Length: 366
Image (tube, rainbow, N blue to C red; front, top):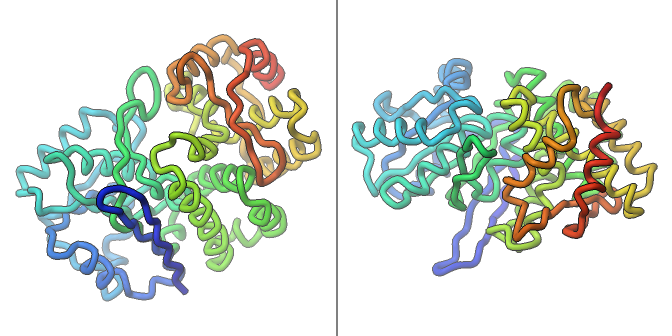
């Protein structure tokens, strides 16, 4: 079974990004890829861990044959999501003969996709790229929508570009070898998606934790498909985050601050889960969200062993300062996405610092 989505975007000329969710590895990838490349030479940048696990398993009719000279192994980690790595990869590509008739293919998780997408956006003033996301987090969120970027000392993704991939190919078989910890991180983004815009997905998550925990293919297909549909709808309305697309930042304002202040020792999914709970607590304190919805959120997070409290060692004041350099801090106002019910959120920009500080203080784990 395969789901195909067309992400049609305005512009001159208009651009269509194809999203394919391949449940069973039906062998259509080589043909689809060839049609997409239209004669361009592809350079593959693989997360080196994924390459080790999957390269031999993918040799055959379901995956394209790749010349060794066109494969670059990337040591994917948040520490390598920096300009120095982009420069190193660019130099390697040019030495191998990459030019404006080339395309890049990112095979890996969110870090790989962000770095390769950003490199494609700026290399030779921009060449096409294709995403082959291999983690749950990348499949349900980061690979779709064209956001690319690298980190600075001041925060996450502060250098980047909107550069839509020609094709996003999701093979659910990649999730078979995903470590439990990585799967858990991805579930935070799934919960976020359900909270911000899909009450049916939320009910599915509450009803089918066992099937997801055992990575049953149909359950994965249901979840990944629902997340991609919602994100595609949002991105088509607001490609470059001028308004509606901000809803996708639910949980990320506090989450990014925690990641940065922990020097990325707090994983992205864990940070987003805490950020979701912080946003829900804030919404309850403002009278915008029922206490029962907050309790359901905390229960669902705990089902996946995602944290719901801020670890010791962080102060509300330090977290507030970290949020001042977030991209969502615009013209002196911090845009906070708050849930108003399961499946619906609002963009709130009238938040007083003391209101947020009080909520963060309550969430500190003592």
